[in-house]
Image (tube, rainbow, N blue to C red):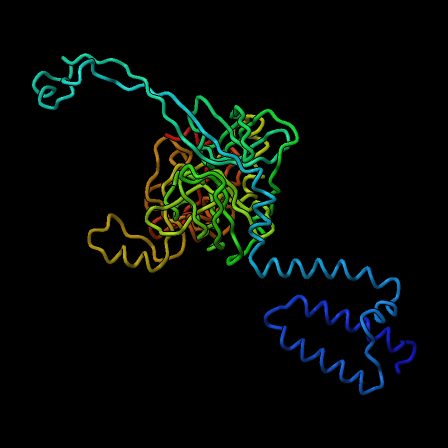
Length: 424
């Protein structure tokens, strides 16, 4: 007998622990744990302990022990839920009511002829366009996307392209309630928008931390693809910090979360969730030539500007006014070995300027085509994405000290950033 510990009490507590672990049934541990439990009980019997009946064990367990049971039950239940994959169901159950469908309408005016015969190509060539009367024709274009509530009073996050140019925005909740939506603000460069509906005590989606996610973690896309409401798809985070240039939308300034969770037309604006039901991104783009790959705007980027958009404020985007690409020694060698290359470039790491737009900060500062940017404010530059990020994070009107390699010489230039909307 161990000092200070009664036989029945020790056995009861050990059996309760081992039974609770047994109930978890972890696939890797289960068989081993059963053998360990059998060995422990055998040793106790050899030492002279007796195995009491369940009723005797319950009587022997101290009054403080029953508190363990509910906790153990919760652990067991959670373990079984994860094994069955129902963490997806739990996440969707928590967030699903906050995911909304956004229907839009906008009016466009087209030129139309008064007589269908006048549309005949031969007739048009014979008489000429100036002889054919033109009448204005209005058309109603409808669109659909997704969004999600982040405020009990009706603040909704979605993509800018979902509501772009809309005359009317209609928001439908999962429970069937329909609201008129008002666009509070949008930013085309980051493809983000805020829509407001009038409501109280509405369901909301909790926002997570996109900086904390890792490649290989679960990703759950929720939305209304192809007009099919409340659709859920499951995948993983395929990669992080996928630049908008790599995605094929160079007019944006974003580093996307890439996922293999299916994202189809209509999913845009809906949330991408982690396995805890927290929003880690906004589904925003698909590539028709990349089967099973979708992209989402990291939620931390959204957090940084959502309040400004909700207030109707413009989001400033500093720019230099150059088209550029990453340069490596290997790329430079390929360029220089091509007899048709327009110019020779130094075999080094940096960012080569492919074009300088007229009347832009770069043009005014003397940046030239073929310059290789190697430093900005003392920071070495090795990729176009890095340079873009530095410029995006600068202030409007800030002077950036840029070091460029021009031929065999190194030049120091001072470029004062301007707002992107002023680009030519």
